[in-house]
Image (tube, rainbow, N blue to C red):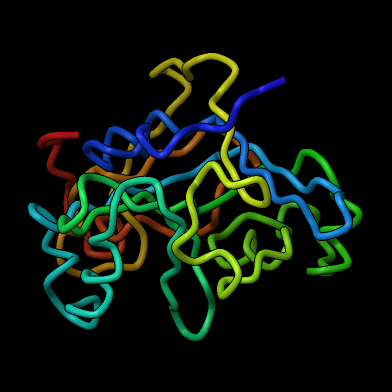
Length: 211
């Protein structure tokens, strides 16, 4: 039986944690015991000590403060009223996180469809808010709990995903820090979100920098 990833997995650079989480599994156990799960096919890292996206625009103080908890805690951003699932990184007092942006459904797809009816199968979990709704995750019940909790946890990839199977891009939907290569996707996977990297929208090239 697979053991959930411990909080210590996230006590480090969130960009590296985001890359290593790719190919892992997000598992939500419903109150009745049914398992809903999906393979993680897209992630982003946010590292406020060196991340312009954390200090500009509307991201700001409240959101950064929420992220500055001990590593390995479930957190949520709210974008246009929709919850986005993230995991805190680095020691307490440092704002950093991994955002889970898309899943490939594994267990419980029929139940997911009752939470989020869709016409195209890949629209079920191919976005950060979509996956929260599809898995029936309720932010007030989860926020601040440990990432290895029984109800909601992560499993490591069966094997590390080779670099040639990973596409690295800028993140989606930001202005500042838009050219940092801190988004990771499984190349060619149908459940990757349709959002364009911010660098593409801006017509700029990514900085390779530290990743």
